[in-house]
Length: 295
Ligand SMILES: *[C@@H]1O[C@H](CO)[C@@H](O)[C@H](O)[C@H]1NC(C)=O
Image 1 (tube, rainbow, N blue to C red):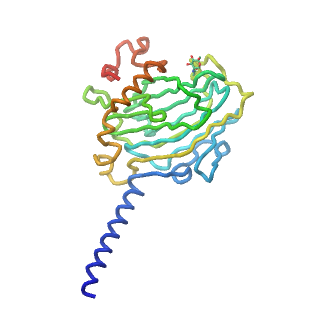
Image 2: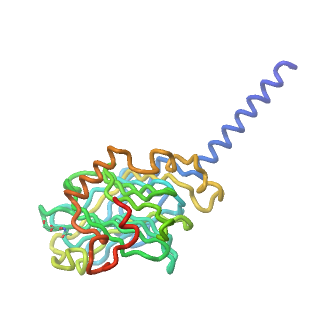
Image 3: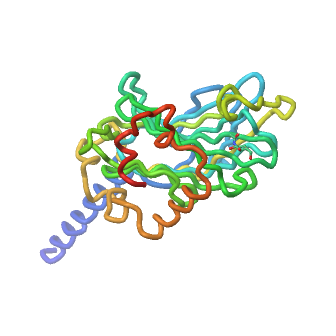
């Protein structure tokens, strides 16, 4: 008995350590995998969102009665959020599928946007990204996708840490917003953000300023989402999580693009970018300060 006792307490100690570790990672630092019901709720038109494959995927429906939307149950402060999305096929002009993070704070909103703008059959889909920090947006960039995003699922990710916000399409960086607080440019870092998705009609602006109109004869329009993955500091949660430099999304590899990623980013900007607020002199006669920092 005397020799067994320390062993038992060692096991007990190890077990409680393991439980603490498991609790920390399951409740505070949110990790994969996620099903729709575990992490999300319908926020707009229940009848237009269908869970498929046991909740591991959803179908979003847009028709003349309604679009639809869903949101995460929790908010997150820093992390990486990704989904695989199959966009509306064929004549999708006027439809907008969005995947974004939003602090939901009216006047000082932080928001990180992916908006997929449909097009006439055979014409390229446009991805618009935007960054709101402390209530200031108007930072749109547009990239035409180099593949047909309605032919299959592709991964779209927002990676957010203290140094950068990255937008990735299949691991290709299409947007990098640097922390330029030193230049007086606001950076989203104080407010947790929820994860949102919507499918709606916006042919008043999304088709090069309303040039093309949605063709309702093609309705209903469908978009599909799967492989929901949210890793980040959930709020409410321990206040120490967001500032923990050991969180993997804060790691050295994510302080800036690697040389290989920088090459891909340059390739996107050179070959596929169709709009950049930074170079829109009509809107910004004075170049915004964050635009002077290189790409
Ligand atoms: C649609 O296709 C046209 C013609 O290829 C292109 O100029 C435009 O950027 C595409 N995207 C949208 C949203 O109109």
